[in-house]
Amino acid sequence: MAKATARHILVDTEKQCAALKKDIEGGADFAEVARKHSSCPSGKQGGDLGEFGPGMMVREFDEVVFSADVNTVQGPVKTQFGYHLLEVTSRSD
View 1 (cartoon, one colour):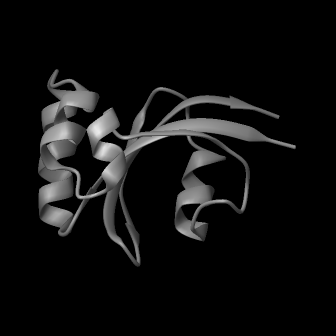
View 2 (tube, one colour):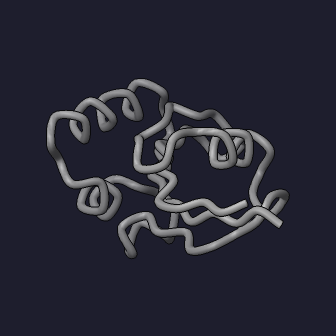
View 3 (cartoon, helix red, strand yellow):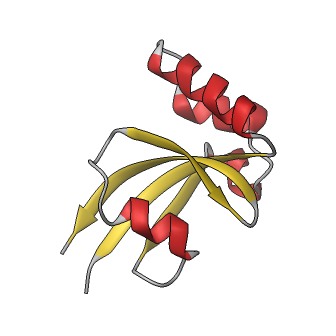
């Protein structure tokens, strides 16, 4: 079964999510941005979600995590929790 590791940043608005993505693409450290801005408890660990398989996260999350390029920031991704920036840090089939 496929497995992935990822980290994310969760915020309330698409506008804030897009602004944070621009900061990261401009050189800001993903983990540091997560610690400062993410409303998810994982923010304390730099957004690290650990390892998981398909179906363990919400559908919108899975679609990105199991298809996007590794080590590339994706988003904004809207879920029922808010807006996410996602970075797949590893994936195996």
